[in-house]
Length: 276
Image (cartoon, rainbow, N blue to C red; front, side):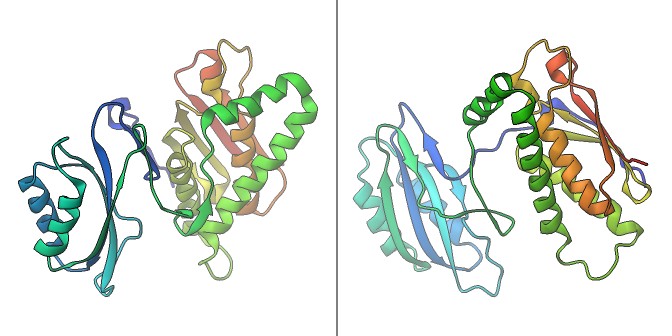
């Protein structure tokens, strides 16, 4: 089975994780609401805030709600005129919209807003946000400790990839069939993009026959390096190897980084295959 996905750089947009927000000049606040889960509630809230001259910067739904859930949590990052009192906004929401059960308002602190959300979940698994500058400090240990640290980094990456496999495979009962191999492989590649490794372009997804090829644009790991003579996707290759070792049930899995942005290529290209 072959999948091809064209890469369009102008279609790949960043996503801001809903845990923190910063504005250096705007009067930014966080509204946290508990509402009855009914159609039109958000529309009513938006209309009332617009009448008060309040602009909604972002809407956050911490936990998606299906129609059988009676109450939902909702958070709004808002920009209010400096003459608008936050107490008035809270009062009007409580009085003016019957579906609003409770509402609280948090003001920014020197431009920063930190959301009261915890833990952070990816699908339904807890995750830890790891800023790239912190990871870059880890990569610098490669220069300091060489092959010793690379072996440790590879081990961590393989465990990471194995964890992704378990996340997607736990609902599959019995042996994998042909479609399962390709479906899990496709889910893994989508997960890499969702987790921030970079924008993924699938060239070949023939996991059922033991071969996959894809490209990562703006690979988070390799973008740290400049003008390297060799590919630098150490951690990325280990994650890939860990996943496909689990998927194919064998230790010998080849992962080659054919192209790498650290060497000046437009993307990092990975060829994954069963090794004899």
